[in-house]
Length: 128
Image (cartoon, rainbow, N blue to C red; front, side):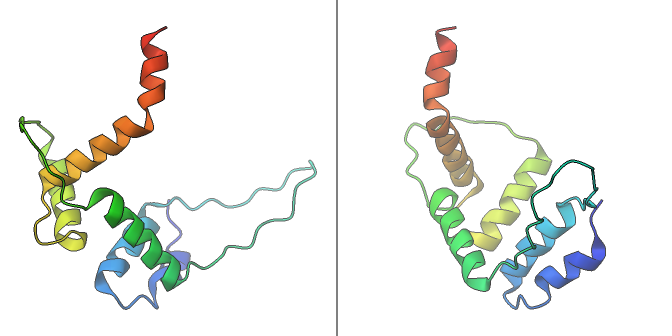
């Protein structure tokens, strides 16, 4: 369950509608957890840090660099995803991607990133 009172303060000062939509979505889907106290020794709580516009922009630029660059796809093959996933990816591409970016392109980039990230694990698991 999200904490509505804290969600609003996260995006009140975001003027860029694209960034505001991202922040609102994260705030709406992030569960609110109340802290519980125990008798065990605890480290001092970390105060919640406000994410600066500069940090948000850096994160957006990193995401765009990783997933929203138009890939070259040779020897294309059809891949099926649910209409919900396709609609959600289409929205991301339209809002954050460039003019030539497509849903096929973001799927290609996501899968390439995933395969690269788990390449060594796949090899190790194959040998089990």
